[in-house]
Length: 336
Image (cartoon, one colour):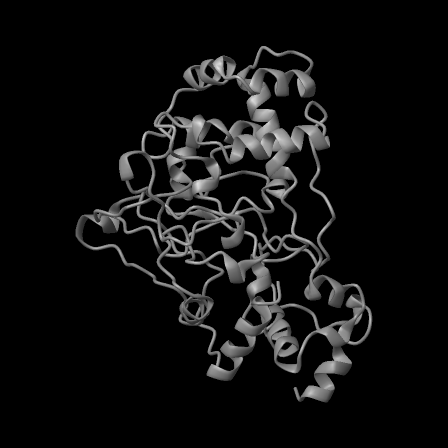
């Protein structure tokens, strides 16, 4: 499709755009601008003072046992709310197991962490605090430390009506802050809202390929560009020192072996390195890997009859994208 035809195809309402290439069984929705705010649960409504308190807690190393590690140590706003490392360093400079996911957009996620082990932001909070390789603290000890502080009892009193700090209050304040981390509308959002001239010819071609030949919308669609599901991309290292079975470790369901949660692609240009391994340094590497169909490890020896050996996701297949097409997809991804 030449540039003039491409411009014409995407000039009208989205209902008239070329249909995306979607496989049977995929869960998807049409691309859409991002809402201005994430939904909050009824028992933790968003309020400016609560968000401000949550930000202070997020940036405070007193939430770790050493007093040296804050949530912000691994979730830096300048790095897309990640930390730019393949895996993070935590307590006593221990290396984590997985790449630190961005906390931006987390208020829209149906589950948290790469393996989906937390069902809400409020539930998610305690995991890094209590993880021995991350902040290595206990929730009761953290609550006691904040209650003994000079500053926090008064601040919690103004937000929650009691100066006696509880674990629930801490979780709600931090969740309210993380829920506020919604990126501002960018050129991609404005393009979707009707300003069709905002994407360059290359970026528009990338959008078209994203929807069609590259088949990206099988997992990345809707306003958040995530299906909130779990997929096996072949990066499980089964039977090797780096083995990570992802969702299976939460559910103990062999069908989940090797599966990881689909991340949002919003601000993806800032959130590398990519995948739960942090093993892809840039977007071009990611696109090249998908173009090849991703790794497809085959069982060997006793693994052939092992029901736990991860099954390749049927959505993955070689794409046959030429270099110019891959360049266009990267250019589009950088607008998100």
